[in-house]
View 1: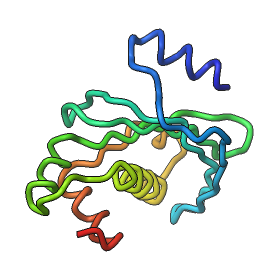
View 2 (view 1 turned 90 degrees about the horizontal axis):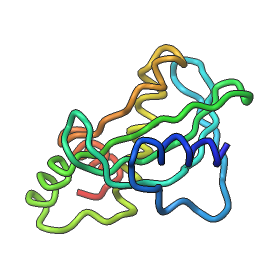
View 3 (view 1 turned 90 degrees about the vertical axis):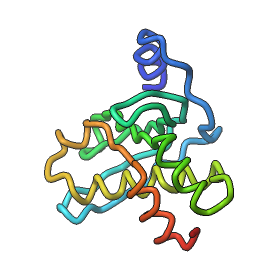
View 4 (view 1 turned 180 degrees about the vertical axis):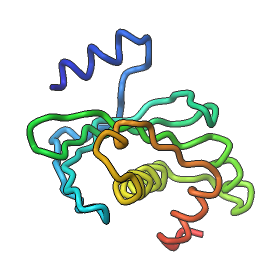
Length: 138
């Protein structure tokens, strides 16, 4: 699987993923829609999306324990800059990761089919603010 992941992303001239733990920790999430997803963190990198530049966090996900698909969670630089200017401090890398996981969980809960989960997940200004308030990081 990891070879396929590297090949898929290197063929698109994207920077390599960084920050993945040395030992993969597969986790389980039961969504409000009734699906049970297994996922793990594969890494992050700088990327562009509809929200503009930002960080992309990649999570291989399975809903049946047999097939995996990638879910990209994009956190916009603009949203991060908005939050940082309001709070007067830089957002920590672990806080970006927490935002990415909360956005992933929100997508698990909101998207009503497994096919919809393969679409990118975006976290802009309002989502960043909401997730960090939930975490008590405001």
